[in-house]
Amino acid sequence: MIAEKMKDFVNNNSAIRAMFEEGKKLASIYGRENVFDFSLGNPNVAAPIKVNEAIKEILDEEDSVFVHGYMSNSGYEDVRAAIAKSLNKRFDTYFSENNIIMTVGAAGGLNVILKTLLNPGDEVAVFAPYFLEYRAYISNYDGVIVEVAPDTETFMPNLADFETKITSKTKAVIINNPNNPTGVVYKEDTIKEIAAIMEKKQQEFGTEIYLVSDEPYRELAYDGVEVPYLTKYYKNTIVGYSYSKSLSLPGERIGYIVVPSEMTDYENVFSAAAIANRILGFVNAPSLMQRAVAKVLDEKTDVNYYDRNRTTLYENLKKFGFECIKPEGAFYLFMKTPMEDEKEFCEMAKKYNILVVPGSSFACRGYVRIAYCVSYETILNSLSAFEKLSAECFKA
Image (cartoon, rainbow, N blue to C red):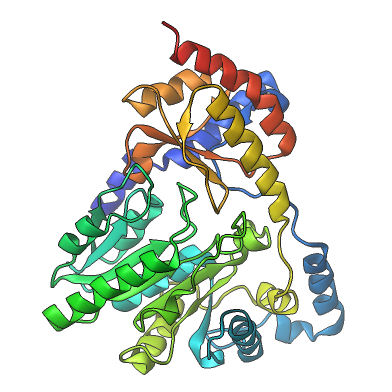
């Protein structure tokens, strides 16, 4: 008999993964080119060529016992130092290798952070809509997720509701910026307001409240939009990052967390996070990929590719009568459905071989997430299907 905690996960498996599996089934029936799968945030852009070159260079030139062996649970010191130097150059920060822990992607990093911080019953506030796995990650450590109600006009954080949700039990607040699923970017003024509320609540309750910044989409911002670096606004901030999107390496599971020195109880937090990395079973982040990313820190994915997809899809959906805000970052579009039950819309979309994820998976009903990190040909070929879907939705 499986664990009680796992029963809900089995019975309520990820809607994203369920749609992904549905897409494979439809592709086997109708042909991959005739199925428009917008379910999974799996980058269609190839990794920069220098990533492959770096891997080959490492395997050809470095000692294989060293490359494939264990290292500190926090990761290679020289890799962490290189990342710290890159961050300092880009964001005017003052990190060293002693502020960086290499992790198994952003998901691994978030689990490390939550394992480090949470006692059973501690609360973690999240801004709806939010990445559905946060609920599972918090539950892993017997924490309690607290949802801040969405502002469906702008999808910016609802700060009035946020302030009421912070209690003496609040241990952490998770921000995902740029946001999955909406594509909005929280600007500097918003970050300052969030930080001010958290500082006030820390003083009111005499507790430490940590701001956890989940940033796998940091490099994917459009139209000159700036993504604030949160350690500059609130000292008890921990940043989680992944190269899954910025270098199109989702399957390699490589990322890092930043634990700033100015954080209260920094030494214990950093030490505990390094130990959490080990005892969660990761032991350390993948050794080869650590060495590879250190060589390509200045490389970027092709943001223009995603931007073209974003603009084409957004403009046509609006033309067909659908409602959505134009995303400023990441590679998702959060579209309002013509009917109240977005799951009904998802089923209707399947008739046209369109696969999207219901907003209820992100704690925001009446919307669907469309991942436009697909080929441009898929975007173009899907437009006639979306037009037919629109005609059915809006027919008199």
